[in-house]
Length: 243
Image (cartoon, rainbow, N blue to C red; front, side, top):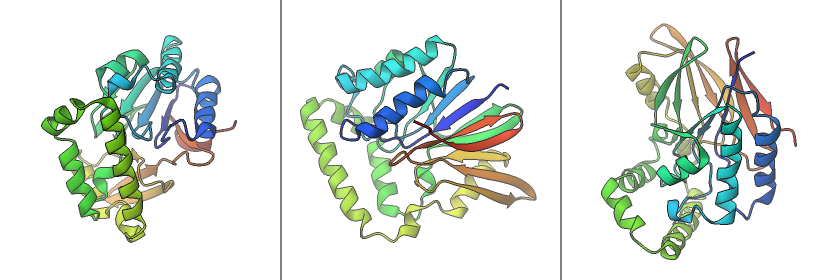
């Protein structure tokens, strides 16, 4: 049966080789035959700029996508909060299409809203202010003008600071805000399905909005064993990645 696959929050990096091997196994053994693969953000732990594409690790990941695309699977990528600096060079090397966040797609007859999910965590005001700053084109141009090594050092420091701050934040504010979810769905005329990642809280929620049922699928992070969502005309099924 024609089907599409959805993943997010892999946070690929050389220091997590088990996740990299899991991803490569998934690309070689699970994705072939799928009509489309959607990556809904945070493919990498961080992305310092497309001038780092020739790094052997990054090049290997791009090649994995390219091989899949060569066999006829369409690949769609959405920026996450870790890798929003991925640009045209990476997408061309990987033979994939960059999606805007959010995007509404027709998934086998079911309108489905796709988003990374970080914009829905509106209770975390500090993060939302930071997100606005780093998504500004002028800020990005100034940052990308810096030497690559300097950019990496800055990102590493920001990551350390972010992890420390997370320990002090109530867990609830790092989850989606129900009113933000409702507002987003309202903006898109209440589609019957939304799929997102970011929160690392995989789940299947059933919502009732404006007398319209909607299912909210939250994709798992790949910190341990990984997982993906398989969708076809009959619906969606969460599945583990079997190494």
